Image (cartoon, rainbow, N blue to C red; front, side):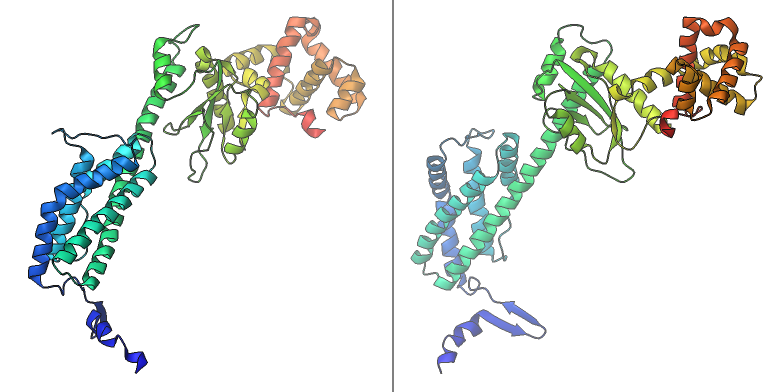
Length: 427
């Protein structure tokens, strides 16, 4: 029957057992004498085959660096020979699919990673090696009369072996990449620590700064802004702040150094990258004064944590100068407030607060009762009554420019703290 042709061959390859389906190996069906003959010839020819493969690889990839081991032998030659020998030994022992010797091929992967190359060329080289090896094994198989099904199986085993070699190289490559990333982060942190040091260079960048910047490939900018970030409540990946921005996520509050912060497109890029993050970016300063920008960013973050500055995103200190100047020196402002606002001590908290708000509106507008009333949203007659009280409480001091300046300072600070109403919010 036409449908039965080839059935005996299928029965030879597939063997049914109770509860399982197993595929018999055509290679294992080869008589042991032939297997030993095949292995003996392949092992004897392994050194010459390895040299032939390396020559072909060098011809195809002339720019490939040739790294020598401690004995002066090319590591690539050692790896190729070792791969061939292990493959043949395991075929002879009939241990199933050959296992890969990891050491040399992990080292190849590490080398590609450390030299900044991709694994593409390495994989192409491996495929070339497997093709050449298979060609030689096919010739040896013909010499010792290995049946074609067993040789086909050998091809499959060879490409599976290739996958294992690539896996080992990928592992070495990833290890090298992680090591390089860790080393770069370490060098970057040392650079940032030097930038934030109060005692480093003045004027031109110091030699140490130039050297550290060069080691991480960071061109020294003329001006920088330093940012301090607050970690989101949920775990978040590092923001993609772009090339050139130094970012250290190891701090409890991550820090970043933004070169040339006013450069075209830089603010927009940072805004997009920092979506979902909160924190502050200090004012732009000359490179030698990066520590000053850091101090202002840290101060802004402290005020954000106290609810005195908006905490919904990353703010720029230059847009919150009044709050940073007036809320920073708390002890000085509080002491000044005790002296300047002493006349309000006996007015009671509610009335004292209304008088303070009226006084601040008058100081800010320098206008009469109608302008102050419009600012506060009250009747002009109420303002006239309060202004008379204010003049009675402070007397002639209220006309002294220095005293008026001090009063406006402390009252603005109290408004920023939320201790006085803000007419701007009402409007």
